[in-house]
Image 1 (cartoon, rainbow, N blue to C red):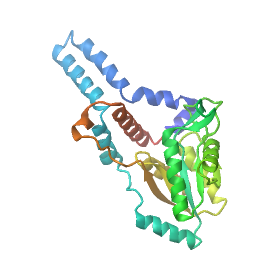
Image 2: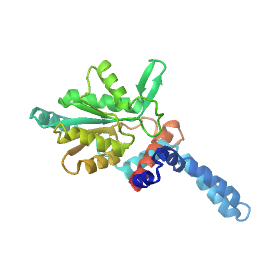
Image 3: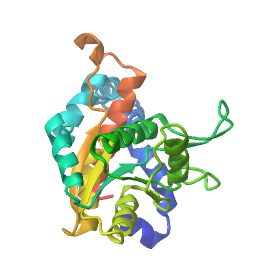
Image 4: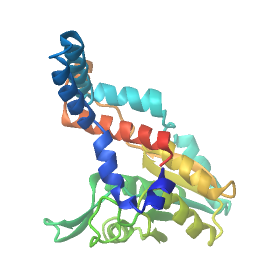
Length: 270
């Protein structure tokens, strides 16, 4: 799919095309089709309308998002204490290891700070990557430029992350990859950057729902010369009553949106 968009010269259309195929827009279209079908075929029209309403409802439920993530995306488990200890031992044994944090969005200007800032998802990833670095001693790389959906006058995300890591966490980044615009470019540019410094093992940090595709992209970019260990985060379950997981909510919409987006990206190999 990426190759086709590049061939047509419309790579920058990716965010728009994605938005058009993700919920709730397809269900709105089905509602219109169902309404039109009521006139010549009343039963079929109402069936389409009811299916559309069910789709709209489920596309904003935390429970549906959890089902999609757990059973369709199947993210790897979080690193255990034993796995972190093994990683620490590998670093002490002089194995060339790098922790790679993938960007999750940036704010060109956060008025409360008066400067650019990381989006909440990106900041959470950075925090976990820096925590892993403190626990293991492995240096950190951050990968993120100006995404396709961002304004072109924004600062590269890696630059923003480097400032926050140094000033607010007291842990400077060792590498900044600031040219990538999507996950595929994250992988290609970052692997190339780390290979030059002799890195043979990457500990990849991103959200659990994003990890299956991100890990696949990095393994393809590495071509077997660099080991990729997944270190997913954001896997905590909601603590609300189970019944509330099936009531539409903003959190539910975001969870389903992320899961469906990843499934589509895996399907079209984007």
